[in-house]
Image 1 (cartoon, rainbow, N blue to C red):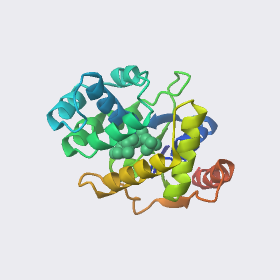
Image 2 (cartoon, helix red, strand yellow):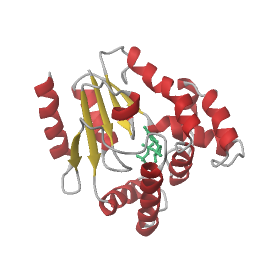
Image 3 (spheres, rainbow, N blue to C red):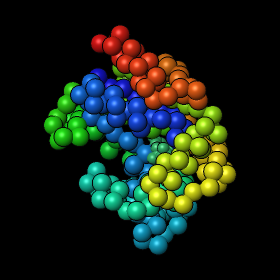
Length: 218
Ligand code: CDP
């Protein structure tokens, strides 16, 4: 069983994907990590995330274990990591180089506890359109930029990171624009995706709705 969940930043994809993976005993792949890994790899080596040659070189040498190592960097989940990820993610060759790594995960999906399981929940921007066009269930989870920025702002504050709502809103809009206007795999729902707007929905409500879709499919 392959479930893809695409959508813009802070729409609630990650939480939903992890809850689904736990309930249906599936692995979870946060595909944004591959782009964050390249972005952080560049920054850690003093290279600008706008540097195409550097980004392609990093993507060429990226492995699953290197990505997990880079995820320990304090900037990996910060706005710095997010902006760097969205810059390298706009480079077509970088996307092409990282695609196989994302697709290969489904061949032998490993769950959180290390066991091999029967499927994957993918979370990202193009998992239903490019990474797994044959997925069993495709979801596109979205919310208004204001609601998403407020969620991200609260998340940063909870983690003890400094945050200003206006700045987070501006960054959210900037990333939305870059993600949806790029030439390679722009952010857009797959033709056969179920679109869920979570602006006025809590995570439990979203989860219950999606579980009904999965149970029906099963
Ligand atoms: O949740 P958030 O958007 O903050 O982070 P993420 O999912 O880790 O994505 C970071 C960036 O990676 C996004 O802004 C996209 O530019 C890029 N990305 C992508 O292009 N394709 C994916 N499948 C996943 C992420």
